[in-house]
Image 1 (cartoon, rainbow, N blue to C red):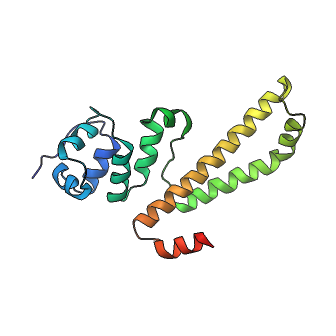
Image 2: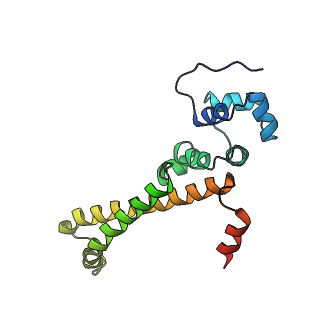
Image 3: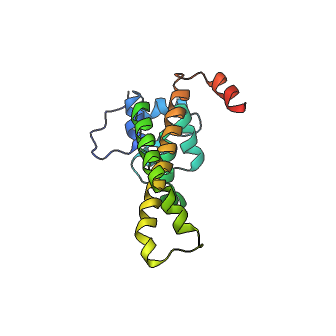
Length: 169
């Protein structure tokens, strides 16, 4: 039996493994392709996991949020282009989405005015930045909904077969 870690500032990888009640040895058995020593190095940030390792952990731990964690915080390209997506419940996601869409409804005429001539003048910059931030908020909310869906599919709370079938329609 492994020792319980008392370390502060644990990585998401370690927090999730411990939440599942797994030692590194048991996690290695579950993950099949990652040795306990490698897990320890990843968790203690002595090495960055490879994308395939993160995919394996996300699948086997049933935590798709690990993919966003890796992309937004550890991948050099993702750090620049992938937003950190917060885990939220469906009701909070829907309310955030509706608030953002309502805000954009009010701004769409202004966006058309700004875009009509193909460039942004100095007096349009403030409005353009405000609209762009609202669009980014919508984008993150869509990603949050996607992550929520993946978590529900992984945990069996949404029937994966029916979901895939309906997505193909």
